[in-house]
Image (cartoon, rainbow over all chains, first blue to last red; front, top):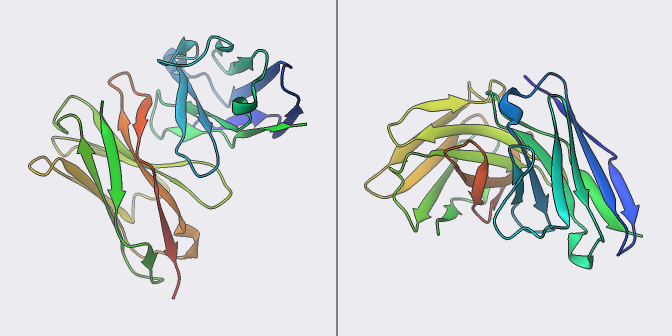
Length: 108
Length: 118
């Protein structure tokens, strides 16, 4: 089973600042089959990126995804108030599929 | 656009069976997609439970495999989750999810909270 470790656990930033979230896999993710989701309180997760860097429909271009192998990043430029949420990475290349423990992006 | 809606009892007794159904609208469940269940204990992260294809093929999380059964009913356009021998640790919001043909989760149900308590 591939374990995904996200860092930091919590990130405190102000609107307008930039954020970089990390997701590290315990072994190489086949095909870079790595997705990112955003989750707000009381809501289901929302797909942001798949295949590490392919943006899902409707996701603003201030969000970008990158990385390969075992190291992946989600970058958010010029944070907007609606970006403050919990972000999860997800490995879907090989079963059992796994999620990272999440990074909480909170407003400073 | 595909929509998913979970339904089932919100309260299950310890040692009992948790049963949930996910109704799919906006497209046939027989499309070439897998359909999955994911859960989230209160205040915690996401956990993959398993997935099912319209043919009935399944794939389960090793940690839950002994207690979980997934099924699909193409005539009703829904799929179901049964989990037996539940404990308080199974208390969570349960989500049903459409798996894109490329493997990622593109559509999620709103989730339903199931509490295991006597």
